[in-house]
Image 1 (cartoon, one colour):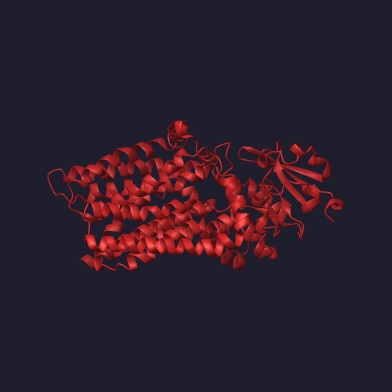
Image 2 (image 1 turned 180 degrees about the vertical axis):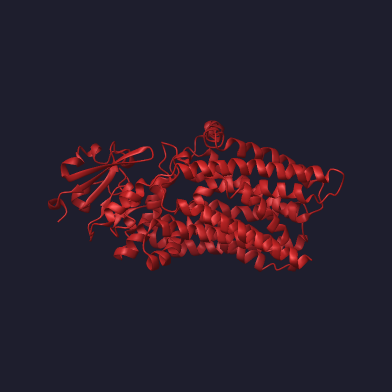
Length: 497
């Protein structure tokens, strides 16, 4: 009977995974969803191009253009993951999105398919997490955020999974590898290496496994985490030290308010990122369920629940440091939203399974199903609205440029990286006082420049130099993508030949 139930659960998980995958297909060529992109932050509209432009340049032209953008130096493993699909199938947006989607979903399916407990948790997660508008959208963006999040999730699973066999080395080395992959994918996720040590300290404190085994795991894990950090330092940071330091000096400076203003910033980010129309119910649901889950820890004898609750709470806690940042775009919230959602699904799963069998058992089951259905209705209504309001303006510009033969002359501009997927042209951004902003036409000899009409995307790189870029154009075409008005300038041949 158990074998049958396990097989049935696996089929249900596989079916739900396929359904989720199919739900993403209509979005593989569409513009990033306008409803989750604030007007002040272009986010996926430009970042899908920026995250991938250098590996695309390498695939198409054999030139990684390392010093032309800050993205590849921060996201080396992300570029490495995209290399093979781009090389085999071409540098198309849908291929980049599909690669991210399949790997991320594959990791989650692997975790949920390991046993009955995780499988049931996965079913609740399908309705609560994987269909949540923000998380759903980033699963099909060609960006580093959801991939790094998936590897963090995998590292946490691998940390606790081998306890049955007390495989200390396995439960130390593999999690260290996977959590290190998260910041190899994007350096911003370096904080994730502290989730595992913090969790293990709490396991020791609350005696959730053999203390000797936990101490050994804590020590081994830290050794392996340090070893992989050393590998990153020796083989990535040091060979690129001067460039890396230049990028980090720009990225890290003024990221946090002074101490007196930190909590004001926390409240402000919470209000504008989480207490918004499409997230406020999700956020308050987490608050309520977290309290229920915490109380339940004192009554249940299920160690696996306690372990997972602590792990996910540590993840949420460490993710929350981002709320103190002076700049908090939507993409920074995704891993936090994912951890919150997984925690909610875990607690609802606990309510449903209700290891404490008593007269309230049926009430808990009805309550857990009711919460799940309520959140699922919200998620699917958002999905339908987003599906109905899809736009394809970036796809149109990509198709337009793909019909022209580009050689060594680049397409320049922050938006250029998002409209050159199918043209095989070299592309990289322009950022005033940061990248490619000095004597732009003469130094880079672009054949096309794609910028916003008001040049806000490049911090007025041309205007601040007293240059009217339109004077260099042979012709100009205008486009509108979500909130932004763009102009595509075909540069006169005498300026780049």
